[in-house]
Amino acid sequence: MAIFFFVDGIDTFAILTIHMAKIHDTSKSTLALRKRKRFLLSQIQVLSDCLRASLVERYSPCGKANCHCHQGGAKHGPFYYLTQCLAVGKINKFLLKTPAQQQAAKGGIESYRQLQEQLEELSQINAELLRREESLSGD
Ligand SMILES: [Zn+2]
Image 1 (cartoon, rainbow, N blue to C red):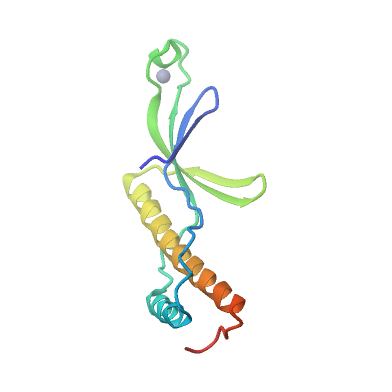
Image 2: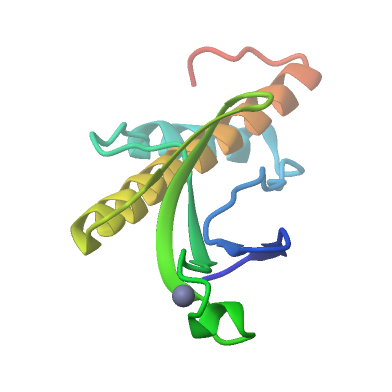
């Protein structure tokens, strides 16, 4: 599932996974929020393949000047890269060579995304409870 595409002049990229915070409904009763919180806490688990990264699909021209890819033909690919933004301007990026690596990356990214989504919802509920001058601990 490609969500975002960009072209940098030579290569075509598609970022296949990108995640952003979802806004959860915190307008429910305090009782309902606490119930949802208990449920989330019972669901949250850190899976061992957890991976905070993006998968990038890339098509590139090759090194042969007479190849069709330099004459307006299709570029080579897809190549799959894992990219990890570690800090501003500091990106860890490498090629996922085998289908097994690509699958492992997809699975790990999904595990991380799920955990992050659950933590985000818990966090939004806690913020709402605080706003209502409720306790964050206990039921
Ligand atoms: Zn080529």
